Structure formats: structure tokens, C-alpha cells
Length: 253
Image (cartoon, rainbow, N blue to C red; front, top):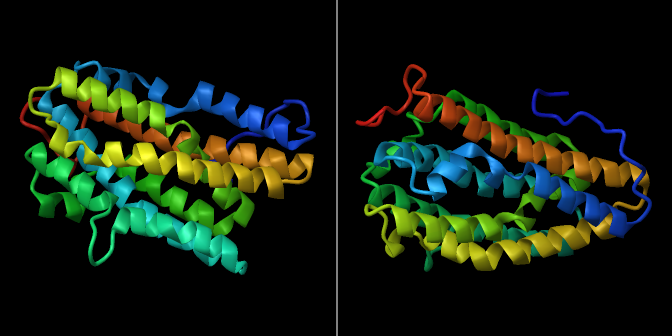
């Protein structure tokens, strides 16, 4: 068990798919990272440009690792139909020869914030906790069951609300943000519900025992921990003011 693994709970057994879905939604309501103080500050205009830069820089490592994670998930399945249903996620982030993907859109954000794209892509300035958390997520989907690998993506159930808050809040409060650099979030308003519905249908169908349903819930808890700990590290480094050696240091800290 890794440091990010969830501790089994004493909740009642999950006897059917409806009970599973209700538990998953409860987990999101209590554990999703929209509740973190760092996000509240970010969305309410309480950060300076350097702090927003630090967030976008560190989040790039997560965004750029998502297609790697999804390629690992894809490799877990002998079932062709599941691979077909999953593989568009890689293109959503990587793009292809004639269209941009989420990673390019994220680089539009970091460039719009004044960060050098080469520096962002190098990931040299990210926090150690960012790297450890994201790498733990990629490792998780490779070593746990395929069911748990898909279940860990279910934070997408809750993503549209945070994207809506982010678009509205950042455009309202920061004069250095313009709509052109927010296209990543606007696109995910369409993509995340589609992906979440597939994953939810998958776990409802394939988690057929109380133990399997509990494993699905623990996978989601693990993923919420991955997201939460990244914000803990950002808060400590750029709100409390203790960036570790080698990490990005904005002009105003």
C-alpha cells in the first residue's frame, strides 16, 4: 500500500449499482479538490500573478501525464471495444496531425501567463510533490485491476463544476487572464461528461460484487487524494511561502 492509497472504511456493503453510484457521488461531494482552500483563493481572485503561474506550471505536469496514463489503461484491456471507447482520450490531450489537444491548450494558458513554453515543458520547476503524486497515479493504473484503473478516472464526474467556476472566476478577477487562454477548460466542459458517463457505466456494469464496488470507491478516493495533495504542496510553497530548492520562484512571493 502506497502513501496515497485510501484506508478501507466501515461503510455498509454496496449491494447494487445504485448504491455504488450514490457512494461515488458522496465521495466527490466530500473529497473533490474544488473544496481545497487553494482553489477557493484561485477562483476568488485572491492570488497574485506569480501564484497563478505556479499553479499553471505545476498543473502542466498532470495534464501532460494524462495521455500517458490513458495509454497505460488502454494496454490493460484485451477487449477491443473498450480500447476503442477509451483511446479518444489520448487524442483529446495529445491532439493529432490536424488538430490541437488539451496539452497545447494548456500551453496557451501558461504562455498567456508569461511563462516560457520550453521551461514549462521541461517540468524543471515543478514541486516534488507534484511529480510524486502524478507519477503515483500513472503507477496506480498500471498495477491495479483494470476495473480500478477506469474507476480512478471518475473524478471527471465532478470536473464540469470546477471548470465553470474557474472560467467565470478567473476571467472576472484577473486582468492578466483573457478568454483566449481559457480554451482548455471550455473544451473540457464537453469532454469530461462524455468520459465520466462511460466510466460510470463501466463500473456500474462490471463491479458485480460488494468487494468490487468497494474497490471502485477506494480507487476514486485514491484519485481525489492525488489531486488534493498537489494543492497542499502548492499552498505550502506559494501561499505559505516555502518553495523547495529548485522549484519555480515567482517574482512576487
